[in-house]
Length: 337
Image (cartoon, rainbow, N blue to C red; front, side, top):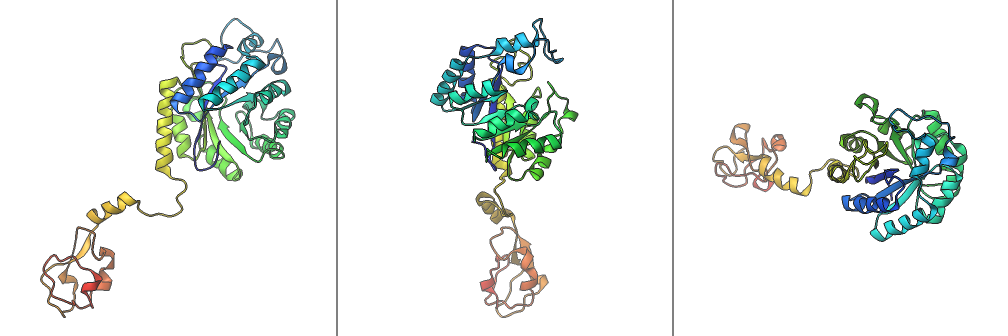
């Protein structure tokens, strides 16, 4: 499950199954094979989501009405139960966006471990309250929203859920680079320090999710498809299995590279060994007789870094040699009095 200091990666299957259970099951298998932590669908019921006369967004093509399209993307209550059981057997977290009481009840029966609120419902207080009543973890996207709406939504959700993920999202398909506003991830982290901040991506490539992780995102949601040439409005802005796997590899590399758990600045074990080779020590620049005073002229600063560090030169000057020192002897404090 999602938490701070690790990245929870969600394959957003959404509607890319086109209403076909077999395709949805293939997506579960593919997401698991890619290394995703979870796969998410959209529990759509056209009658509770949209009126029949509603218009379509620019990126949604086709002769069908939007209502008819959504109707064609629906899966049955039994389908979702089968999918949930199938995903559990395959060892991947399965959950869904819910859009109303009907779709929420369907997902409750399927045994969801968490719920997703889509950007379109950021200000749907009725739905937010119903989801909060489940007391399950919830992830909410913030596309098209302002800070007032986001704060109001979180305030409602936290009355029931103690585990909340807040995703920066730009609800464009696809957005231009200058519209991504990825710095908002860090702003959300400052405003909501108790909760896990992430990023829901609709770009055409896999660079933005990696950048989001570098900026602190602990949840990444990316649309996922078996084939971008399949019909459907979300297919072109989705990652296919090869792209999704590559994205996960990049994120896991960054996750290790960033090391958010670090509380101090210290070299690691391997770098400490390299330090002995590349750092320099104080050495005898000439033969030094025992009992003689060490002067700056008698000191050299040379590799390896296994002796007195170069930074300690002022502490060495003025001391006496305890014994005879040959030229290029690496100095230790035990050689001095």
